Length: 137
Image (cartoon, rainbow, N blue to C red; front, side, top):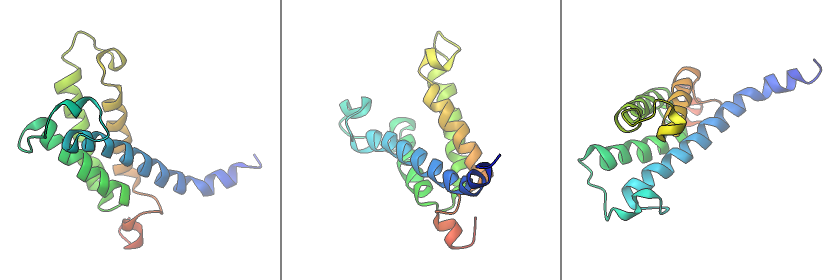
């Protein structure tokens, strides 16, 4: 195929783009839990209790880990930890409901984040990252 070589050359940059976009969206979940921004479902909670499992500890992992992942700092271990957090969140908050399917129990974003982060922990951060700049990708 004539154009496949250009797609192959571009794939590392798409990996970085996937990491950046997923990390930004994940940070939004953490910002909601910690700072009531941008006004999502946790906006009704006056302030996060930092030493509670949710929203406190989860918010720290989501916002802080998301920021590190967005920048591409310690990308592989951070992505692995965040993948585990999302697996834990799914089984603690979504799976025990009346529905086994993620779409029906509200856990589809937890499952998607879990597997995107698991992929990033194996694939690395891509070329647009501090890890790559430091030679640690």
